[in-house]
Length: 437
Ligand SMILES: Cc1cc2nc3c(=O)[nH]c(=O)nc-3n(C[C@H](O)[C@H](O)[C@H](O)COP(=O)(O)OP(=O)(O)OC[C@H]3O[C@@H](n4cnc5c(N)ncnc54)[C@H](O)[C@@H]3O)c2cc1C
Image (tube, rainbow, N blue to C red):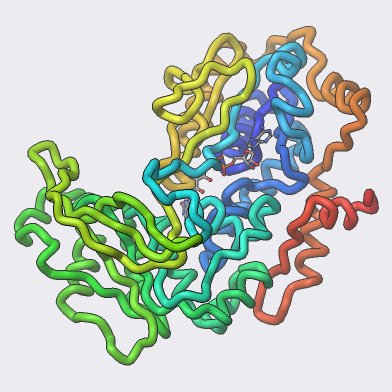
């Protein structure tokens, strides 16, 4: 028998557990260890609440958790409740799938002013992340800005733009829906250092902006290179650029109360305001020969009393695990950190790619493990039994997949009309459902 510990229950963790379960069958036991009592990582706390079809991928992960050889061990923060060294003494291989949950900082003056929030915080607020439920982003001003040119920036802008009933069928948390109902925000500027050709926005997310009930996209035709330049783009990217070109050609719909303005070639320089963010100062840029943004010296103001920064994430280090400071992820070579220690997903690659991108990652690492420890062999490691003993010694009560099912049922029962669930947010609320308060 082999024993494997996968740390983190997001897509990367589940795909890895799935691949290991397939490779080893009954010859291995796999524990998915998660710091929250509830599973799924960014599927629960990141993916937009109005993208329910994407969140349905968790049904596939349920099947993995229901495999007799796989166990969900929630409420156990690795690096805190148990160390990596302890896990390595208990398991034949330890795979870090801890994601990249921390916002990268802009590093500009004024970034600490109230009203400036990272996208992990903002997204966590509307998605019921326990650390960000109390964020209370200022929605009392007319202007907001989102810094970044990726899909997360689009998610933030779209959520800020929707009317109440456009959230029907979503699982946006009640506190966010109420706050957005009262929002005074009318203009959301999406600020990007480079141009349309350099965006990391996908056609589906961009296309949605053309169908918002109360908001219209605003794109400047002059920001685009000649249309022939699009031929060199990869087809999906070209589709995105076509959507932006269409927005520019059609022009904004003046009948809509809100505007989502794309401000390309704008590099944030500083944030100003009297005790809170009031405006973002940006420098006009142009592309240099290598395609990087080069400042032109011309600056201007973007009014914004809410500024959401969406410029990337990093993985928090864990004691005893080599770390790549520059990349903001665990130092690894193709997923291998060291002997018996691996990483997958965003903790391996950094914050890029879709949910599905994490699948080959998990498969690759499972293959590496199977090559190093051929199925059929066994070891003297204690595995999950050893972990349970350690947790009991420390008075830590883990949650099981059945516990998650109970929490999920309570969330479904509490759902407001038209919503699949009303998420429980606090640790105490989760444990209360389990009769542990
Ligand atoms: C705002 C946002 C929206 C997105 N929307 C989409 C989308 O619409 N479509 C799409 O395809 N992709 C989307 N993505 C990307 C997708 O979410 C990621 O590709 C994917 O979640 C990465 O998987 P992961 O398992 O590496 O990390 P995560 O999903 O972050 O999972 C990491 C898990 O590890 C746990 N963990 C962390 N530290 C510890 C620890 N010390 N001990 C125990 N457990 C720990 C975390 O709690 C979490 O459950 C989005 C990403 C973001 C940020």
